[in-house]
Length: 119
Image (cartoon, rainbow, N blue to C red; front, side, top):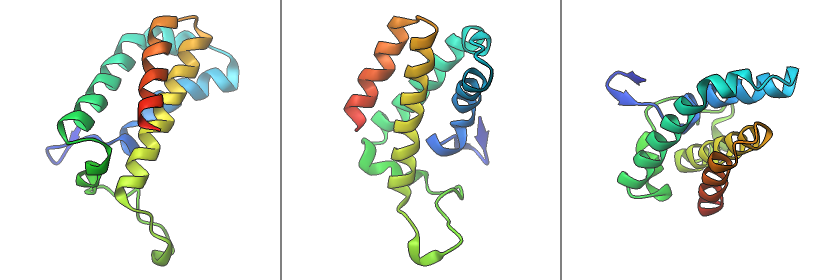
């Protein structure tokens, strides 16, 4: 998804894997994961490509054109790099968890390995 010709960042686009994971946690259903398994891999590849082509985690600040880093208390504002990297890592862990629950060991291993590299 592109808003204003900008690519989705890990914070805003993470809704896709979060909802799939929440559906599993709230009702035990793996159907959303199974149905969207390949789309999740495309999502992962897109995020991974953006991080790689952008110069890695330290350059995630370039994604600072959305609003997820703006807290109510301006004095406690985290960096854009921190919020983007944290959401990217969290998303990878969620994707690995739901893939494991679905016995999708190949994808779970890919997500887990990347999460290890990021953290």
